[in-house]
Structure formats: structure tokens, C-alpha cells
Image (tube, rainbow, N blue to C red; front, side, top):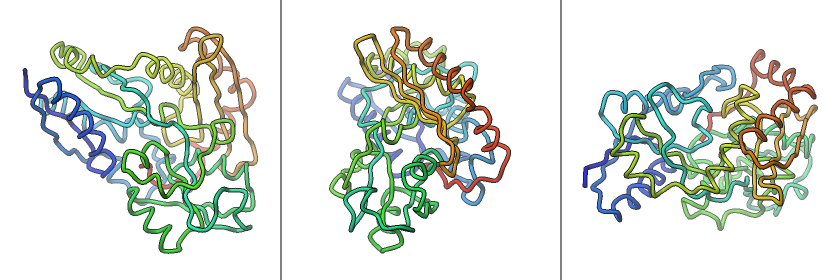
Length: 311
């Protein structure tokens, strides 16, 4: 068996993900090493990422390392991966998805309805901020930066009344005891690909592609292909207020999607079923655009929006 080199960001969660995949590969008989690579997104701490507008800000440097032959594959959070990969790269495998929902964490309150007016809620995402405002316009949504441990310390230290994190990240780090409530997708639509991992390789690296093939989970891949088709239709990345979540349904897939203004004053939702994941995703994206989503997205890209760093 060949030695496989994994490229990964250096956050606690990213390294958990890389080590998880490494462990699965080792069980197949491969020897594996991990190289930590700092990405553009990791370097930006004082500029709104929605304003930067750089797609691939969490993946480009890792792709550069693959192109140079320094690493053989990358393990990403799928929601960080642009919908269109650069030439020469392949989404080789999509492992089974963890919980796609967003989680509500608080010391004193069991869910969002219990929060008092002007409660301080921390979030790492413009998508969450927009939907929180639509649920509770009286809350103070505060940018929350740092890794999961840092955010939890800030909550426990009393800086926030509640924080919102991806359920998958909390579960992967063994911190589910801190979760008080999970938002259902009908209440807070997840980001496209949330909870799923992406295994990216060079397009012409047949050996590595074959080595990671066993990790692919077809039901997860079908769902995220659908979600990413919506995102692609809307021209959005992981820093804009777009949610998309697909799940099995009687007629193939049920896709729910949302585009919301950062202050929650305008929110457009669409829900459809279909058999063809890419076609369904594109149709839902087109429907959102026809109902005014472009105006919201133009405002996000055209104005300085307070959005904290993504996890």
C-alpha cells in the first residue's frame, strides 16, 4: 500500500476530521501522514469574509499543495468547498454525513424562545445571523470568532447568553453535553453540505482516487450534490446568507432552501421534491432568484456586512 499524505487546516475540528479519515485509511492498510496548511481564510481575522468575496479561501492553499505534489488528498468541511472546483481537482469521496443541523448552546436557557429581549447570541455565520433575526428580531447577534473550545469558553465566561454552532462539529469534538436544543431545518436551514466531509484529490491521481473510494456514501453525495446545485445557481459561497438542505422523500429528494437579508427583514424560502438532484437544486435556485433573492445577495456583496470568521 502506498503512503498517503493528507492536507488539512490546523483548527482543532479540521484536525479531528483529518485524523478521522486517516484512521479509516489506516484500517485499509495504508500508511498516512497529515500536513497542516494555513489557508487565506485562516489568516483573515479583521475583515468581513462576505466582503472579501474570495471563493476557496479555506481550500486554495491546500489545493496548491496537492498540485505541487506535497500532499495527495485534502479533507475539507464540504460547506467550505466551492461548488466549482479548479481544473485538475476532483471531489473523490463524500463520507456519510453527520447531523446537518445547527445547535443552540446556552448555560441558562434551553432554547431560543426562552431568551430575554436584547440577549447576546454569538454566531460564526451570516446565514445563522439572518435566520436568527427572522426568528427573534429583538436579539443582539454578536460576531463570535475562534475554534469551538474558544467559543464555549466565551459562553461559559458569561460573554454570551447563547451561541449557535454546527451540530456536527460539536458532536465530532465530543461536546454534545453543552447543546440545549437543535434547530430543525424548517426553522433554521443549514448551509449546503453542512455536516458532511469532502475528500478532494488530483483528477489524474488514479491510485489515490481508488484508495478513498470506499469512503464515499452515495445517499450523502446525492443530497449534497442537490444542495450545492442550489448554491451554484445562486452564485454563493459559504459566507453568504444561503441555506440548502436535502433529505430522502417519497419522490426522490425533498430540498429546502432559504436566502435571507442579514437583518432578517427579508427572507425567501423554497421547498420542492424531485428525482434528479442537480436538476432539483438548480430549479430551487432559479425559483429563489425569481422571487427576489438576487436583490438580497447584491446587497450582501455590495455593502460592508458584519460577519465573523467561519469555523
